[in-house]
Length: 242
Image (cartoon, rainbow, N blue to C red):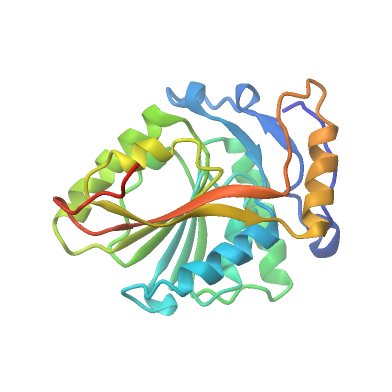
């Protein structure tokens, strides 16, 4: 894993390792979906917090303590750690790359040791998100643009079987929503929010420094993330306008 490495204040404060940027071409696991990986970059804590506040105002069908938080493409686990501070029924981090899984597990161990885990259960699963069954409980899936369109389509298709039965509840929080059109074109999902979510000043400065330290300078930083929140409403429901 190459690329530049600059420490985010989040890591300095909590003694974990979630910083840096790793381009998708360096995230090899031997899986057929490797070529669809985008990049590893930890979500800004301020963006995560703002999205969770917004999601909680959307009148989810179940209480947080009855809900599973599913971090799809968890990387080193920053979003998973932040979610673990909430009283979710379970927090699951899904990650394909074994090196990132090892880092995420060390981070989680430190998070537990520091007494920061409030969720009933937290675990990290190494493997392909498409092969992981949708939890049999109300679920909020968190995606920080972990892969491109073909894999997102396969993932939603896999979930559709469980969702179509009418027994599963799913909300989806999508950060850096480059594949927004995939969700827009998937029957059964309704968009509840679309907009720019600002980073805090501290996060904007930290992320800018991380981006500036890239050897090849292929990614850019801004003061916000383009985000959306979606909810499964069932097949045949009206889609949002384009």
